[in-house]
Image (tube, rainbow, N blue to C red; front, side):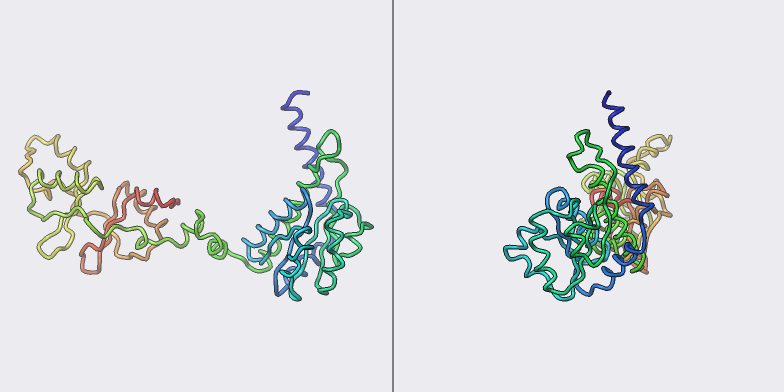
Length: 321
């Protein structure tokens, strides 16, 4: 069998395991969601080996979607980390066999806290299931591994079931995009929802000229400013035009072109501007892209320049539409 066929077989095996688990979803899942939702403390996830790795991911997903959670390795729990558990917490314990020695050893100690225990295992008659207040089955007909030894379909199912719990809890908490972004301020969504123009705009050493400045001086200022534009201000320091490098190139094509001509003659005297520095940077990016400009002047209510926002600043900050 070639690698392509093997890949298809593995995906089919794991997809079948998910569909079979879907058919088994019952009120135990509802009780698991209610148990975690009602927890006033944290949902502590624990497991050994591959189950532990999956458990760590589940805990991370919970924590980033509004359910306070962290992962504890059973061995570390036996050597002090049980002190991280409190009377207002709950535990999600994962073991496919339900008999993992390291995990079974901490179960009596967990029960001493008299806190809810959700057990994820293959068999409802396993030791882990016996300790659980809620049992969620992660049984699969077969692993994708040809030896039937390496956890494959079972870990995929465990991960998916953890995702199902997280999503159900998100719905129950009415967890919104804004909430997700607050947990991920450095991520693309966080940047899109929280970073504002004032956080990125340039306010110093702006390329500024007067309305009578000749084009040859404007080109020098544009080159030194390295923004591909110059701002043209009148005597009251109000913006009256923006000259771009594109404007200069177009000016070169005019029959009456002269470097001694005031730059304002070739400038855009109705440039797109913004008077709200608290506008989201993502909205500013949309404005810049829609008007096919590189630089957005930020003005006060009187038309004086407070700063500029350049397309490059948005790109470097990772702002996306």
